[in-house]
Length: 565
Image 1 (cartoon, rainbow, N blue to C red):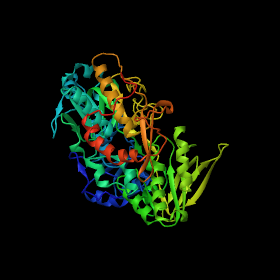
Image 2 (cartoon, one colour):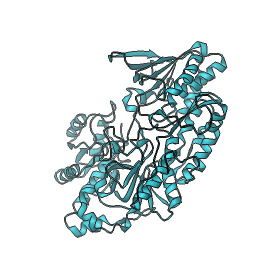
Image 3 (cartoon, rainbow, N blue to C red):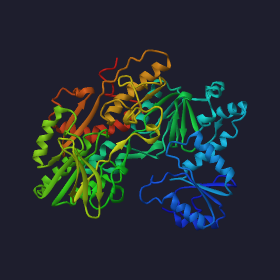
């Protein structure tokens, strides 16, 4: 896990530099470069087994004549207390000092925030700092962290410089709601905080994995989808101080807002499956939940002529609850057409107790399970993968609640990863008990902070986490946020709409559209449980066009919820 010493050291001043994870082999080079002390800001075990323990690094540092201090800081928890401890260490330790964490960002934030704290002694200086502009490639309103900008300070600031709206997340929900807001009020000053340079149309990755779509058509540069009139802040969020109307960034800055929209999506928690990250993309292990792996799914499907194919689904919530079985259906359809399905043992392992969460769609799906001779393993959760031996380990819960572990061999393994709220949201005051942004499920306004709204996969509303849901939620949030801004009643109501086009075979889709409580909400006067070629055309051709040309541009075609006024 060496960082390529010195090439990746970021010198912050004459005494301090920061870097990403170091190894014991790096210690001698650090000493040779003239450093006298090392501060470890990465918690032990955060990076898995490949991360050297702080005790190992400390022993190596002492052997090289260096001071070593362990000051662990979790992602998203660069607190005032940690900053004070960091500053104290810089005063106490012999310099120069090299501080490190996973990437160097937390160490840098600790340094910058501790330095900012030192100028907070005078109220006038604090007010001046809290209301300052930072000039860069775009003009960004920035204030010190909440620890150095308390309510009294912020009240004294000239808040004319704050963003009207800050949107956390530049995915489908963030881009779409920003575009819709600017179509309603073009004068709004909106910032989108999004670290990624690429924007993806993820719903098509299932089709890519089934050999029915070009992966290159699912990605565009983020810069090209940011709505005109919005400001893009390319940075990672580290936390929130909603009482002070601040979003904190991993680079140490904080962004002020009058209203906030939280839509950073959901995080793929690969770390919850032991051994999976080492074998993804090889040894027959794939996932349509990643841009780089969806083509590998199709490659495996084409190559497999006999053997065992496992498909998995983790505990809820996940993006598009139908996607795990859609991967199975498209693979099975190909094997059936090629005449090899009878030589392939297909099994769907789901941690849930049912094939699909809306009962009306289970009977037609079961017809395809029978057609493809697929076995179903309910309450079966993937916990470990041995790629080289091609063994998948599942925790299986029986009817009495007893849990056992079962090893299953495979020739092809399609994995749907466990999914959680982003760490900076889960550990913030905005989160509910499950870690998602706590909102009123009808208005999508935060339950405790009326100037905050949330939509998309990061919202706590109990709807299916799909792009179709975000398309409807965009209208709800845009209208209700502006109503709240004007001091009006929130009258636009979300009915929980979500849609899951279930690709049961190449050329046919069951269009599962439903709202809260599993209520069916079909968009067309057709039996929604019947697989249709018409729905395949929508899924494969119309919906991608609608996404790029309407949803991301604020054109709200087919986007109004039935519960909206």
